[in-house]
Amino acid sequence: MIYFDNVSKIYRDGTPALEDITIAIQPKEFVSIVGHSGAGKTTLLKMLLAQERPTAGSVFFQDIDVHALAASAVHFYRRKMGMVFQDFRLIPNKTAYENIAFAMEAAGRPDDEIESDVPYILNLVDLGSKANHFPNQLSGGEQQRVAIGRAIINQPDVIIADEPTGNLDPINTYEVIEILKKINELGTTVLITTHNKGVVDAMGKRVITMDRGRVIRDDQQGHYIL
Image 1 (tube, rainbow, N blue to C red):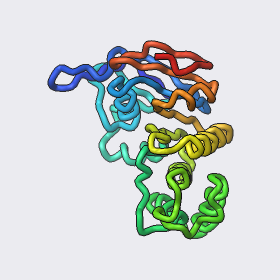
Image 2: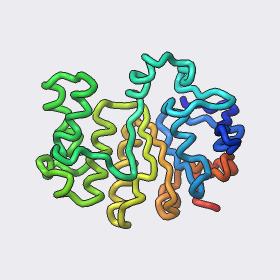
Image 3: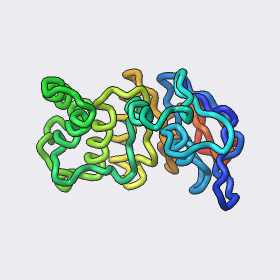
Image 4: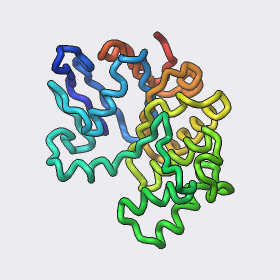
């Protein structure tokens, strides 16, 4: 479980980024976090990733008090999370296969696991036929699916997707969301921030709506309402 307990974040200039956030996210949930730019969505994710510290309150992941971790333990904690970004962040001189394999290599996984797991993940994200393609040979949607493959290859407990469809057309957006739904159905918790009303409305899953650093709605089967 993920639990934000009365979390606030105020920057040095006095600007509030988060105010009194208390939310619980259960294992295997699919949660869309929505709101206008500056609402606090990305700051909320950074709190979970221990990239930002709260001014007040606590963030828990399972039994871990995230911001009580020693600096040496943060790297291992973050391995429980898989990140997907709006701008893909693929390595341009590596193929789809190599981009995903690189995440396993960085985690110290053995060669035999890499050889068995990477093709499985490429098929899961519908890119089995494009394993040897470089990023510039792939569409935007295909690049994002490689990024999703890289995020899930080490079997994280949670996928965090920050505006993953922001640079995609409607067809590629649909394909990426279907992949995230599939991953969620296999048992991984998915947190997604998005401005895309169509994505949120089509999901029919939990929607947390933020505005000016506060949670203003939390609907179990919600829509994009702002």
